[in-house]
Length: 324
Image (tube, rainbow, N blue to C red; front, side, top):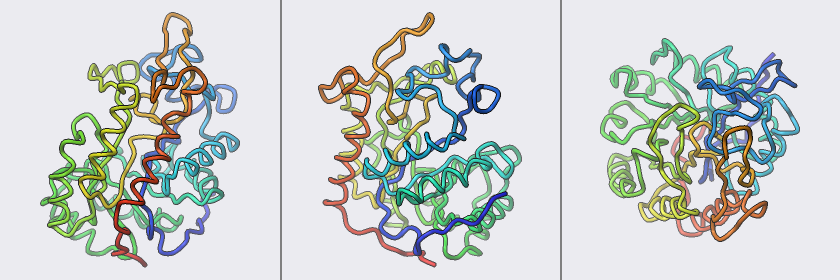
């Protein structure tokens, strides 16, 4: 049974850095089958749907010890909030939200919902989702691909909401403003590179919206979804460049794609050193900021802590425009 979660009020006051978080992994040992590690035809435990291999091994998002360690890492990296991937009521991710939120609460990390485009999603169903999740203590919502649905319906729905913050995943700031959203974020670090952040934030601020561009270390989904596009990590230079661009653009909030989206290779969660498992040699973080082997496993978390500190010291306090 889902229970209401105690969330400090206002839930988004002082939130500067968020990371997209995926609670969708399962293993044979804990759950009876591999879920997500096996997508795109892969056969775990050696052959997984990722170009990288987790340093902690294949894990289940139902494992409370794993969740506790993940949230400890997240807090240590200066991340204020996780935006938990959510695919509708009764979904795998919905059932895991209370445990994820409890682990986050224990570390003082806030919980937002990343509302995904589940089958038959409508503006009306999303409004109902917000009310449902608000009953669980969630106050901030990131809506992925909102402009798949009518802007006029969003405007009507958002006008009815109070005490929550709703951000739209889009660079069409005018449409987000017409839809009554509180801000914009980009998520996609391939399409929306750092060179687009200045224009995005200028337009958002002109429209009275929050700007929350998404930074990420790189992208490699060839094993996860067979997407041939690759954005190289360049030994950490890609991550640094995106952070610098977000800060220079005057971002109100920085969103990180991602903590643990292993399929797309955007994760900053620790990855194992280079290794061959079966026929495939997995990539690693070797070379990132001059670190190698086991020392490199936590390189992106450590660098996130550095950039989080820089961002807080150079940016203005985030306005609390929608506090309950």
